[in-house]
Structures are given as C-alpha cells and as structure tokens.
Image (cartoon, rainbow, N blue to C red; front, side):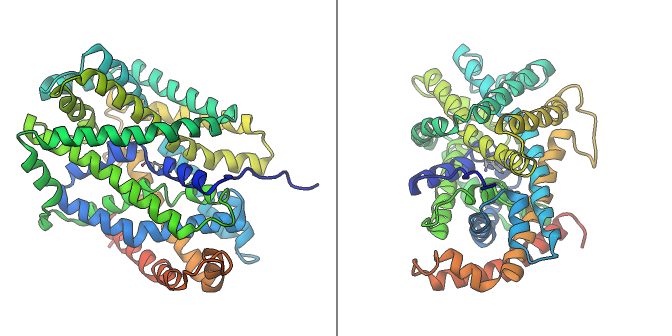
Length: 452
Ligand code: PHE
C-alpha cells in the first residue's frame, strides 16, 4: 500500500514561523528570568549564551537535518537512518517521547497560571508594586489545588482540541500575527523599566558578571535552559525537521530562530530586573518572579491594567506554539507507528499528560511535601527533563550525526545536495557536532550531577 502523503510546511516562511513558535514560549517569559535571577544574573547569562552558541545551535541544526533526511517521527527516523543492526539509536526517540510528556506535565500548569493571570489582571487584583501583595496573589492561586488543576485542564483541552481538529494551521496563522505584538509590548515594558529608579541596579545584575557565582550546577542549569529554550534533545526539532521543505536552508533557519529567541528572552530580562531592584522583589524568587514583577511594572505606568491584560493574553498565545510542538512528538510517534488516527493519538497523549500533570499541579499545595531527591514533583519533572534528559538526548544526537551519519551525508544534507554554497560553515558545524558539543555536554552533565 502506498504511504499516505505526510503533512509538510508549504513555505519557507511557514517553516520559520512554526519553528519559532516552538522555541518562543514560557521559556522566554517565565523560565529564563527566573533561572537568571536564581543563579546569579550576568554570569549565568554568559554561560547560557556560550551554551546556546556552541551546543544549542549545532544540535538544532543536527536535529532538524536528521528529521528532514528521514521524514519520519522521532523514533522511526533513527530506524531509517541507523545502519542495519544498530536499532539501539531509536532509544533517543523514546527518551524524547518521555521527555515531551514530563515537560508538558509542568508546562501546562504554568500556562494555566498565565491564563488565570489574564483574569486577575482584568480584576485589578494584581495591580500592585508591593512584593507582599503580589506574592500573596500568586500564592493564593498556586495553593488552591482545584483552581490550578482546572486551569491546567483548560490548557490541555484547548491545545488537545487544536491537534484533534487539525486546525493547527489556522492557529499558526493567528500566532504569527499575535506574537510580534508580544515583542512590541515587551519593548514598551522595557522602556518603562529602564526609566525606573532601580534600572541601573537591574541592568548591572543582568550584564555585569560575577564569576564567583559560576558553579558546576549553575553551568548545567544554563545548558539545560539552552536545550529547553530551543526545544532540543527530545525530538521536537527532529519532528519539525521532518516537515521541512527540501529547499529549506537549515543552518540559516536555525540561526535566525536562535537569534529571535534570544532577543525575546533578553527583552524579558530587561523588563523584569529593573523592577526587581526598584520595588524590592527577590531576584531569586524562582517560578513566581515573573508573575509578581511584570504586573508591578505595568502598575507603575498609565493604562497599566489594559496593557497587563493584553500581555498575559499574548503570553498565553505564545505558549500555544510551544505546546503544539511538544504534543507533536508523541502524537507523531503514536499515529505513524501504531496506525492510530490523529484524534486517538491526541486523546491518548493528553490523557497521559493530564495524569502526570496532577502531581505537578499539586506541588505547591497538597503534595508540597512529597519529595524525591529533595524535589517536589513540579521541580523534579523540570530538573529531570532540562538537566538530564535533554542534554543526554543532545549527546546521543551529536554522536549519531558525528560518528554514524558522518561528514559526507551531513554535507549533502546541509548544502541541499550542493545547492547552497556553505561548505566552510558546514565543516565548522560538523566539528562542533562531532567533538565539541558532545564532550562539553558530557563534562557539564557529569559535573553538574556530581558524578565526577
Ligand atoms: N522552547 C519552549 C519554550 O521555551 C519549550 C519547549 C521545550 C518546546 C521543548 C518544545 C520542546 O517555551
């Protein structure tokens, strides 16, 4: 029987938008600022930058290349590309399957907080520059088990519905128009932040490194963030690469996505840290940081409530692109390998996430004392994915491309069979993929986990 035609992105621009949609999300607005704040500011940012350039970008290129070469889901791709007998490589795809579900378990919860904040913004409840009031509002939300669960389920029902009804194309069209607005709103926030009394201190925190703050654990966290930010090491970029067009310039697409993603994160940082020092928030507040400081900046400007509402709405929209790309990994594996229809694959995936999501959502209330390795379920899922599974997936992908797929095929793939004149660039990228990235990840991982 002939294989049904696979879905594909139809334009070069469409590819860029979807890939960007996957990269940009709560990672920029929520995770980047809270990790930067908790891990010492500028020094963390520097390590993060190095990790993004030396490891993130090459892995992103490698992953999309494999997907496009195999034109299949994250598991089947390795069956197709690995030499006969080397079936073990497909474990990378299954690790990605697990990572996607675990990430979704907490990501959907944070997205739920964002949805809830749209309504809190309208009500005026979070219009405050007082850290105590802001902290109490956030605490009231996350400590109410039913409320957080309900919001998480709203997120899952909405995004699962998008996948089930195959309307992701329509959604992409909406995201494409709205996410640039988020960028503009972030710019407005930055202007306001830079005119606050604590702007100097905030900027110094973000840009003046104190190298004493760099520890092996900090380096691992920065590397994990680089993977999480660019949706790497777990099959998302591979699956998206499988929908790339043959003419797509992969290295250039990856570079543009990386740069755009980085600018959004930096804007979020510039919007947040001046407020931290102006109003007396703790930079190390963790997951709650954004939910307290962003409202404070809006509160200190005219029309604050309106802008704040739009901001949380746009952030919710931005999270959709990332969530769809996370769901795509298990959905593609289930539908292509087990012949499940898109609908059943989506329902199964969402059901699994809803189950895993319960302990994550209750981590700030009923289950706050349930700990493994000293971490509650929310932190555990986050740590396990960003700091273990994604880097591990990254090493394996690099080893596969560097030593199994090899230099000739890589050059063929990345030059689109000679159509692009980018030989020098490909060689440099291949060197990073073969030696630098896997070695760097291995050292950081082993040190960060205190295994050496
Ligand atoms: N990159 C997304 C973000 O930063 C999260 C994500 C991780 C998406 C892994 C897909 C895969 O918000």
